[in-house]
Amino acid sequence: MYYVQEITEKIFWVGGNDRRLERFENMFPIPQGVAYNSYLIMDEKTALIDTVDAAISALYLENVTHVLDGRPLDYLIVNHMEPDHCANIEELVRRYPGVKIVGNKKTFQFIEQFYSFNCQENYHEVREGEELALGERTLQFFFAPMVHWPEVMVTYEQKEKILFSADAFGSFGAHPGTLFSDQVDFEHFYLDEARRYYTNIVGKYGLQVQAALKKLSSLDIRMICSVHGPVWRRNLSYILDKYDRWSRYEPEQRGVVLFYASMYGNTENVMNRIAGKLAEKGVRDMRMYDVSKTHASYIIADAWKYSHLVIGSPTYNMGLYFVMEALLHEMAGLNFQNRKVALVGNYTWACKSVPAMRNLVENMKKMEIIGSPFEVNSSMKAAQEPELDKLVDDIYASLLAEGYRNEAD
Ligand SMILES: Cc1cc2nc3c(=O)[nH]c(=O)nc-3n(C[C@H](O)[C@H](O)[C@H](O)COP(=O)(O)O)c2cc1C
View 1 (cartoon, rainbow, N blue to C red):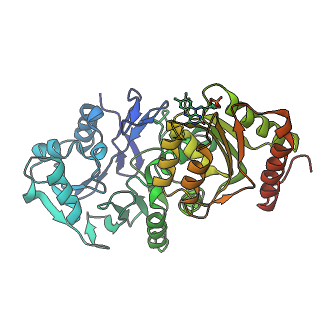
View 2 (view 1 turned 45 degrees about the horizontal axis):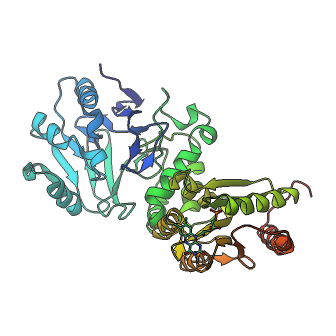
View 3 (view 1 turned 90 degrees about the vertical axis):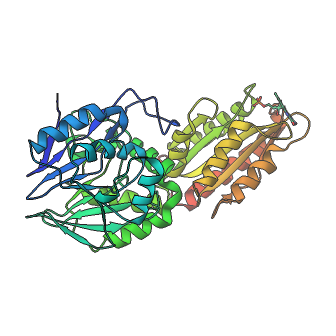
């Protein structure tokens, strides 16, 4: 049976949740599921904003039919052509043959690339800033290229000042019954998943996000409706500030993320010793991950959050342990930058992990290597304690220089 919610007068959320999907984009674990949001505006003309993933099409079509209540669909706004939002275009055209599909040149190019049905007669191409009157309400379209696909646009509803923002401001996590961010404790319920979503999916395109934020800054926005995650109707500056910071690659918090690879436990042992020594100095904001155990998306999200990283890896086949190598490549691919990094390398006959890590890290922008990388020859020896203490002192000094306030102070 249909399940819809009216988000404001005559604008309905007609999306749905998927809590069965194991991995978003077949890559990112989503233990709390994901929501696909679509919105239907009932005015003199009816307009549907984006569709949903094929996994929830049946319920979705029932939702749309229910809200339309016998009326035709006049417009389908396609803000984003990623298949998790476009799976129902063909069926909607079949059901509502007169529907105008609103998009830009690239939108239509992508429709034809992804799908084989012919709906060219339905195209309604819009330009940057163009308006579309629905009756009481008028929509306006702004292009947001590469946030995070080239055809992306956002739709601004002028009467109630609602931004339909495509993937921007989205989050992993299905709706827990509530729909609005102010109905839950966002920091506890969504923030980590919103950060993981942003950093892993949109993170590479900080410059383009900054450009979009600048373009939208002249609009009076009272509500943000993304295609994933909760709807924002209060305290919008909170999520706008997060996006601004994330897209400038600025850490949210001073603290340390330690992540390591280790087969026999000797690299892990050094990482634990570093964390323990930092804790003795009073550092509390630390996270530690084994890269073979924790999915990269969680480590990347925390690397984005914190100011300092400690990275440890054994040498493997004259290079870097593959999982660590993949993770650092992924971070570089996401344009990750602007952090302080300490390195720990391990080897039994020829240490290649330190130069490999250094090379990968130094190829990222605005990265600073702290002190001297700590090299372990199979296992750490007592004689190396002063050298490790020196590295810990350097990490701590760097934290303080960045403004870290020690609980013990
Ligand atoms: C398949 C394989 C390849 C390795 N390749 C190298 C290598 O090229 N050079 C080297 O010095 N050590 C190499 N090692 C040894 C490890 O780097 C070394 O034993 C290290 O101390 C392991 O650290 P861990 O205790 O944290 O797992 C290799 C080990 C394995 C299992």
